[in-house]
Length: 117
Image (cartoon, rainbow, N blue to C red; front, side):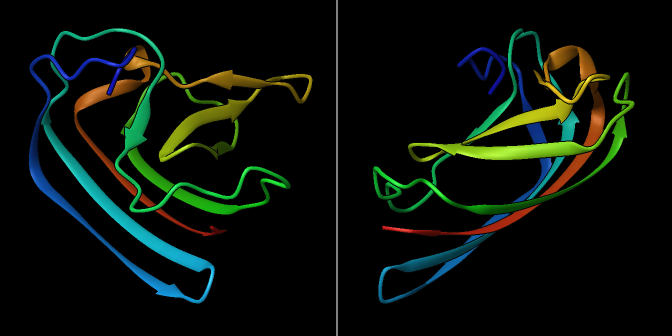
């Protein structure tokens, strides 16, 4: 979503899976856009299968992206409930939200991570 909305977003491919072992959940997400739509705002990927434990909220999220614009630093992700919030490292080390402006109509994202419930 962009700013919580999905207006006009369409996909060439949209796949995800997860494995839960005890309290550990490992997930993999693959998204290839065919149109980024008209929604605006911060980019998030929602729909993780379980809510992470409240505290401590340690997680390992790895992101690969292609065909993005204006990203000059490392892509990062953190969990916010069942949503992955996409950010990139700012020039002085602070995180900035990835937004609709950073996406093209053919952007590809691969996201994987592990968290505890």
